[in-house]
Image (cartoon, rainbow, N blue to C red):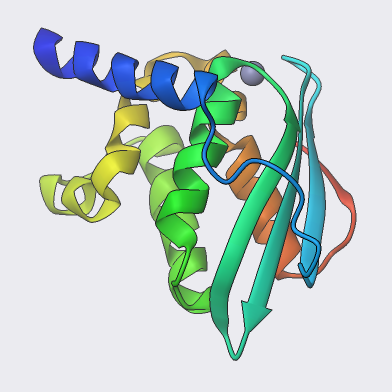
Length: 151
Ligand code: ZN
């Protein structure tokens, strides 16, 4: 288990330092802004949806390693998914991090690389960091156009 934790840590640090899909997305048609006042994380998520498919997704902003790494891994996971699958993945990710019962091994397998955040559930303050990008993405899909605050 310690090896796994170390591996998870490495993936988070890597994505925190070198976030993927980071920057503007000029042809985005869904956007939202997320703010986690507890930590000071501020992220914008840009999504381009066409025919119900997430064709492209990018994010920008500033935050702690966990919030940036989580948004980075999220963008990798969502590209090419249907909007419905993207929302389902958000629910699963959220359940993994906040659920009382945890997730089954099958669900963890579904979450693939996102499982690196499974340890975050033990750190309640970090939960807001790890879910900020996801809440913001979800709001973008709903085209709420408002600022999401994780409280
Ligand atoms: Zn944070």
